[in-house]
Image (cartoon, rainbow, N blue to C red; front, side, top):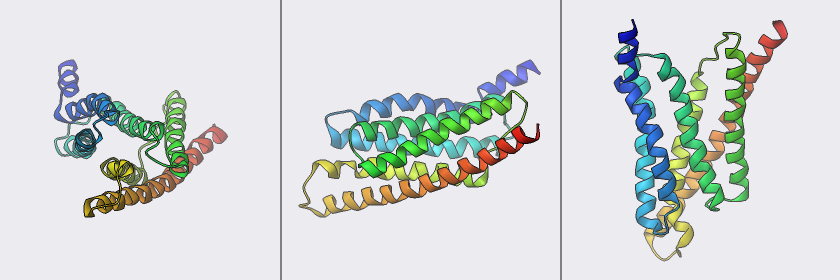
Length: 203
């Protein structure tokens, strides 16, 4: 049994999760690079790759029946670290406006709040499985941030070419997706809160 658990620690789905976590510092550094064009596309490519691993590790763990406790523990944490880190950089470098900063704050605060609920309920062995809507929320967040990163160079350019307008449109799509993601974030956070409070009230 111990040997089996040890093998699962280094299963392919878990390795993809480890890779996603290890990529985060590189994305962070790339977003702070002064050479915004090449660093921007590298950071966007890395973020998209990390987002794909989020889908793949869940798919492979179910397909290959390699579900493990460490995977259940690290997978949501890796997602939150990835999203929160990039959103903080976008806010700090003023790559998004004040309204979008509010949306980013809502997303980050919700993740902290839900994590706190899970930790509290975990003490009573009460599980809060990820809902389907919460998965759509994560997908919307990942797409929104990908578009925001890719369209980011338009902020430092003038509209004098088709490519500049293309970057602007990509950036606007990212902002719209961020709004959708924040709405789903609030809604799913409410669902988790109701479920947790129901348990507290009935316990």
